[in-house]
Amino acid sequence: MNRVINNPGAPKAKKTHFLLKNYDSDLNEFRRRVGIDRSRSTFMKYLIVRNHLQDYITKIYHSKDLRLDDVTEDFIRGFCHYLRVEKGLSQSTVWLYQIPVKQICSRAFNSGQIPVNPFSGYHIRPKVKARRYLTEGELKLLMGKAFDDPKLAFTRDMFVFSCWTGISFSDMRDLTEDHLVGMGRSVWIVSQRQKTGTLFRIKLMRVPLSILHRYEAERRDSHLFNIGSYTVMNDRLRRISRICGFSEHLTFHVARHTFATMAMTNGMPIESISSILGHTNIATTQIYAKLTSAKLSGDVDRLERVLRGHKLTM
Image (cartoon, rainbow, N blue to C red):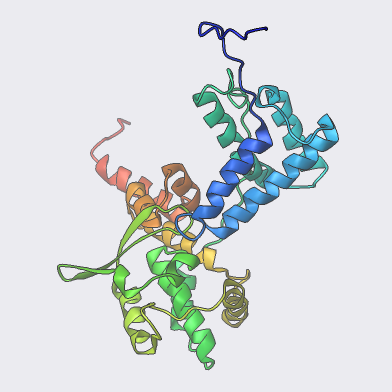
């Protein structure tokens, strides 16, 4: 009778890891965290990327999945080219769609599943668009406008609240009385961003405080505001834009840009702006908080005042 002799010193067979299998594992974990510290919109984007990856692997490699060992820099370049040319996506969208693939490869490299990170020599940058924001003059015009329609008035107030706090639409819609914290004579909002789970703290200035008190009697539950859907609110903002004579339509994200730009123009340190906006990376804040001509002019004027004692000999 033949006997199988186990040799404990013999090398173990190397486990094969696959790209889409790893992706699906991450996707399932992401799904479980939706509504806790991950947003459904981001989950849907990751699902779209998964479908694009499947299509690309099927078309180019004639396979249902790909070994992680075979995910090379050439694969990544080919996938990004496929998204741009075959799918007609913009540079910024391609940059966004390569992020989950990059995360999988980085974790696989760090855990020893692959010997080389294929993204180590490949970098793609988003095409940064000029971000729309209201000037202080436009914001004053909007705040001083009277609206006969109470729904438009409410939408304007929610937009202005975001302009003075930097709170995103989804985070503002989720605010409850539990998020209001008294510190001395001040009222703060302390919460976590729905999108990233990052903590943010905002001291309420006079304008957002007045809006908070204005709608206190209309609360149906513990939520601070009875906000409708994003689509409905943005539709009303388009009407408000026309009434105010703005050249471009407003969206709620314009309010967030407005806060960041207004804060930076008036001298708030970028670290403070980043903390208020709940950014995980200060580089993100640098994109939001665009340096305006007024800010640059003021900075140069301050430098000139400091250096006023320096004289040039004629």
